[in-house]
Length: 249
Picture 1 (spheres, rainbow, N blue to C red):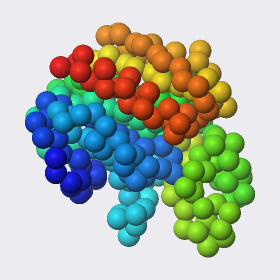
Picture 2 (tube, helix red, strand yellow; picture 1 turned 120 degrees about the vertical axis):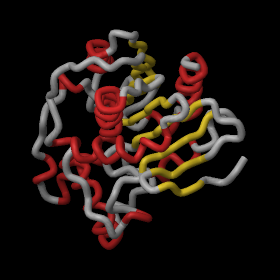
Picture 3 (tube, rainbow, N blue to C red; picture 1 turned 135 degrees about the horizontal axis):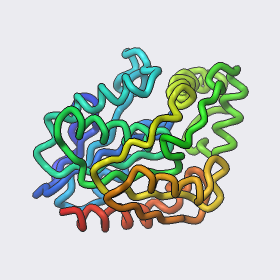
């Protein structure tokens, strides 16, 4: 199997004999590096793409995107060369909303239905509540990151490094805070929901509202843990997603 290949908007992990692809869309403040261990996790027949948002890491010199529609338009356009194989989408937290918007655009604009939409730890589009947290000071942003448990590998206690990390977090919180609620427009593929049983931002019942946009089927799995349950339950989550990927082919 070849090493990971950089491809514009995506970190690309090629497969030996690809029969499908999965696009991973990170959470607010997240990056492709967070999902590096996912690159080979779905077997030799699944190519993995991980989105790289502007303004961080290898795209540090590019301006941040501050609105969901702009981000979804850009990701959808970047996906066009990768639609020759069945494509599934997985998004965690903010990435779940982005995955939903990309799925709608692929179908409406390019007549492409994803093989599956996988959403994690995020309310359905018609149940979202806009917030103004992105307008608060740095301490408020840090407190929210701590509340959600998203401090793994994030140097928020070091003032210099914190100053480097917070602009990306604020930009993504701007996307989150200005998005929704939106009409419950259905997607043309099955939807799979995942949530931690101690997530402070969403309950299992709230997560189940994704069924309202899933006329082709909705299934939900609950894992032990909080908002970032996937850090400790990575293998179990990958197994659940992988089973759905295999069933979609």
